[in-house]
Length: 173
Image (tube, rainbow, N blue to C red; front, side, top):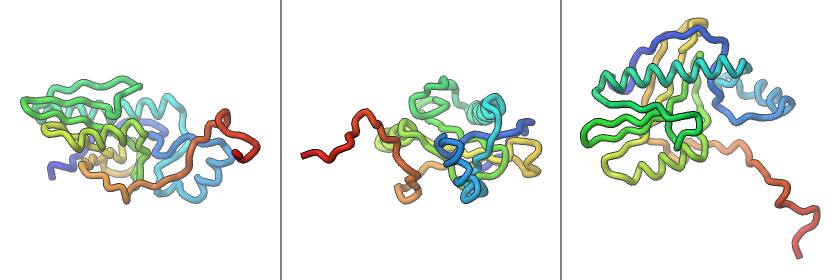
């Protein structure tokens, strides 16, 4: 299956965030309700960074094996982690790495916007690569699954950031 391939394993104690960062009290409630399907767990930032980099490195090697020249984007990326190019073909890959399994991921506004922009262009493609079971402790076989189509029905709103500097204690007149 060209959309699914085994991955390498890394020994880490955590995985990437598949939900936005929340306060401790709010996170405790969410952990109890949603932790099984979200893939969210507490871990050190160093462990998360190691897992994220492991996923990007694995995806880079796979793309290079497919004949692409690959550039890893920086931490403040333009809506994707990897830019893969070969003659007449540009692939923008957003990598989501997990120590175990995950049935949902968090996509930033930048990533969603790049997906929508690239979806309209000929010769370019944006893909979400979900890489699971990267930690040896997961007990599962590492797998990568490529997603090319993200329907709006797959989006799940979990809240909004409110800039209180723009708010008022009174209703406008």
